[in-house]
Image (cartoon, rainbow, N blue to C red):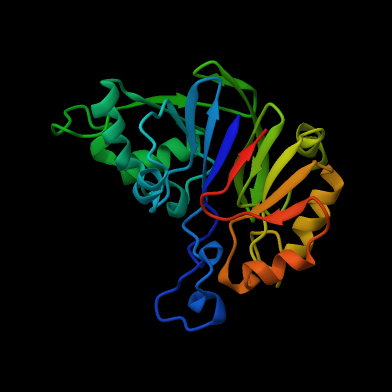
Length: 253
C-alpha cells in the first residue's frame, strides 16, 4: 500500500491571505500546505479520503487518473467542498463514484450539493453512488476499512484504519475503546494543529503523547496550522519515529 498525503494543512494553514509571518513567507515547499486529504493505492485500487476545496489541484498534481471511491471523515467544508470534481472520474470511467460517509455527513452533502442528489439532474452533473456507513468495518472496492470514531470538539469524526495504516484527522479526543482499534498499526497519520491549546484539535504535545502511546513504527503529523512553525525547525523537536507530514509525501506500508 502506498499512501500519498495530498494535503497536510488546514483552513488556517499556509499561505494565509495578507499574512506576513515567517511560515507564510517561507520558500520551503514543505511549508506550503493544502487542505488535509490522503490518497490510498492498495491492491490495485485507488481511494481518496476527503475532497476539500483543493481537491482538484491535489489530484492534478498527483496525476491521479483512476479513482475508485471516496471516503469522508466529517462534514466540514475544508473536507467536502471539492466533491463536484469527481465528475472528471465519471467521464473517464463511465461509472458512478461510490462515496462512503456517516448519515450526518451524507445529509450535509445533500444540502450543499443538492444538484448532485436531484432526481432530475442537469447534464454533466457528478454521478455518485451513496454508501452509508456506521462504526463497523466495511469493504470499499474489496479493501477492508475499519472506522475509528473520534471527537472534533462536539462533532463525531471518523478516522480510518486500512491494514497496518491508520489516518486520524480533526480530533482532540479519542476514547479508550476506539484507541484499541489503532493499537498495533505500523504507520499513523495524526492531527497536530499548533502548539497552543485548541477547542477541537490536538496540540503538538498532545499529538506526540498519543503517538507515543500508540507506538507505531512511523507517525506523521497532518492538519498543520501556520501557527505550528517552520517545518525544518519543528522536525528537530520531534522524538524518533515521529515526523511532520508535507504535501506530496509518499509513505509505503
